[in-house]
Length: 311
Image 1 (cartoon, rainbow, N blue to C red):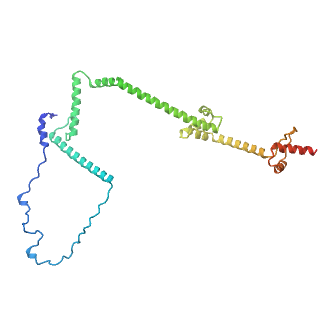
Image 2: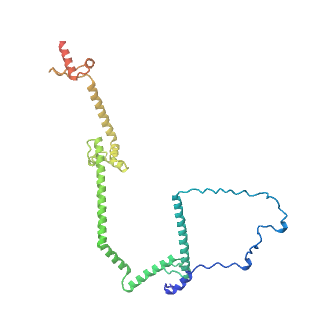
């Protein structure tokens, strides 16, 4: 580019640093004449002095002396509005100032084109971008004149930076932090699996670990339910629902049978060394009514004695 920033342009910048031009004075012909010293500008012409005497048809309403009450605002709201107003004023000032600076650069480089972008320089930012590109180009030219390729130099610099002790220590610290995070995540996962396995063992005591689930015929279904977002407990129940329901029904049936047997009056004889004799349900119920606090052994003993007395 033909333009070089040097002290000779100080004179050009000085033309833009002065105060703004004063507005032009009005012409004499357009000067408004002031009324005479004794003349009342509101006084009507003499020709119309006789007209319009008397009160006006539409008199103005009388002014009241009561001032309007201003809307009360909190101190916080006033501070917020004042701060917003100051910010708007500062933004407007900055934009206006930047516009004046950009106008200077546009005038200085009028008709010239940035060789790196192919566009004219019209703002300060565009000129600074041109200077940065020219500085980098000059550095590359100087390196090439010295027999050094810029890309090779950048590679050497990157290698030196990577081998710097501070950079190496930072990389090691980052790797250690990542390893600790991975270990903590693994521990949390193992804890969650252990808690789920306890719940599964409560459902099926024969299952103690994931290996036990993997050996079951429903292992593939279990994995599918886990992949769908279910917990291990939910996946185990869904995969083995039919078998678990059958086991639950069998256990409930056996419990009911045991409870029925315990409540029926088939009690074994005891207490006197006689062979076991069953007490009929009706007789057991009768003994219960007579001796509500009697134990099964006492009822069996009484029934055995009754049987002997009948012989």
